[in-house]
Image (cartoon, rainbow, N blue to C red; front, side):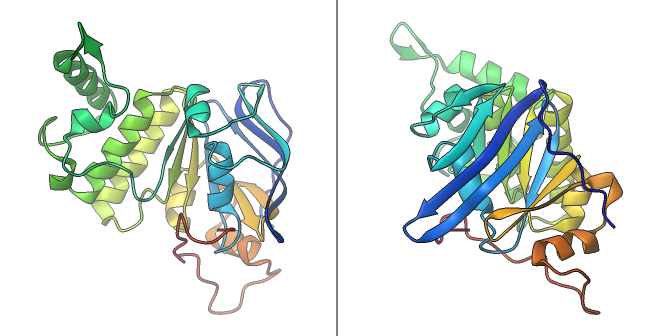
Amino acid sequence: MPAEVSTATSHDDVLTLEGVSKRFGHVNALTDVSMRVGRGEIVALVGDNGAGKSTLMKVIAGAHAPDEGEVRVDGEVQHFKGPHDASAAGVESVYQDLAMPGNLDVVANLFLGREECHDGALDEAEMEARTAKLLRSLDVSIPSLRAPIASLSGGQRQAVAVARARMWTSRLVQLDEPTAALGVAQTRQVLELIRRLSAEGVGVVFISHNMPDVLAVSDRIVVLRLGRNAGEFRAADTTGDELIAAITGAGTLSPSGARADIDEPTNGGSRS
């Protein structure tokens, strides 16, 4: 049997969700969901299509207000009115589409909407210096700070998106399918980047359908099924088959197993 772990909160938890529920009309997208993320901890959030992962991510990001339950950041109850409030509290989210204009360069994307100004003009030198320092600290390699995002590889774009999130928080970063559509080498680089966030004390929520990636990088794994908690496991003490059994609600797997690599659209449907 997999090693389920306690959901008891800790004074060192950067994020705590307790009894979170969210409805869209007659659809119960989330029902009494609880979850915690410690400082510097990588927590994977897994589940099949319709499990509620994207809805929960949007609750944490401030895009959806929960109908019941509490969201706490560093122990303080939050009532986010939008993503700006979540960002101000130290929660940054990287969605699958990355939300980075391809015609803008790396520096412009990192500071988009938060530009540094001096004497009424953009302080390009300061922004470039801060960008270079951050990318060095995360060991992110790109051709040029002034390269348009559209000219970068998929792995480089993902790395820039993660770096942008790290630029604006030292508390919590959410990542939605960060290794989707990446090759083996690029996936390895992104997973290493996630580990570096953890090493810097940043809590990470890692949403993925890729069980090998989940097991490789996570400390704990939270399973959602049909909008409810379906299990929580230490990554070091469980297997992909055990996770799939929790995801599908199966006591045992069929000989052929169950698919865990189903794509879930970030913006599609009321419970995703």
